[in-house]
Length: 152
Image 1 (cartoon, rainbow, N blue to C red):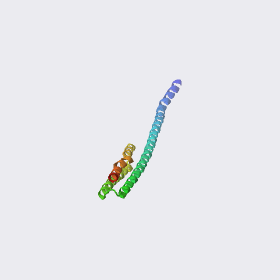
Image 2 (cartoon, helix red, strand yellow; image 1 turned 60 degrees about the vertical axis):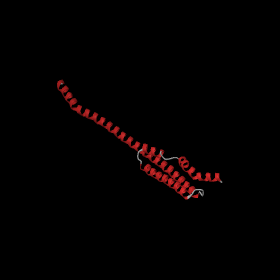
Image 3 (tube, helix red, strand yellow; image 1 turned 135 degrees about the horizontal axis):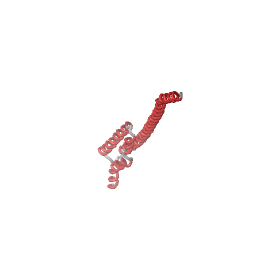
Image 4 (tube, rainbow, N blue to C red; image 1 turned 90 degrees about the vertical axis):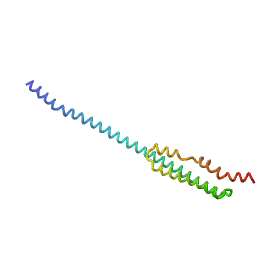
């Protein structure tokens, strides 16, 4: 009778082992699924953060370009009002300023189309500084004035 009891217990243990292994693998699978789900959520959060940063840089670029274009338009106004410049000089300066405005608008469109944070940062940093425009045009606008004043 003891042999039969031991045999039944041994059979029961052997028959239960696959369920124990199965239960363990289900738990492991569940952990793996949890880890995979957590990774997906983390990646989604990172994507959202990057998208927010891209939009922030795009807004910054748009604001800088808008201010630069306004300053360039003021330089056109100053150039137009200068009586010491002849028509050809005014036209040349205004054409150059308009070309810079067009390139800024092209850069603005490129920045708005950027989806990568590194690219949008590089594009915003490539916007010419106001000083470069002033340094480029003010001497040309005021050049004729100073030579006229010194000759009079």
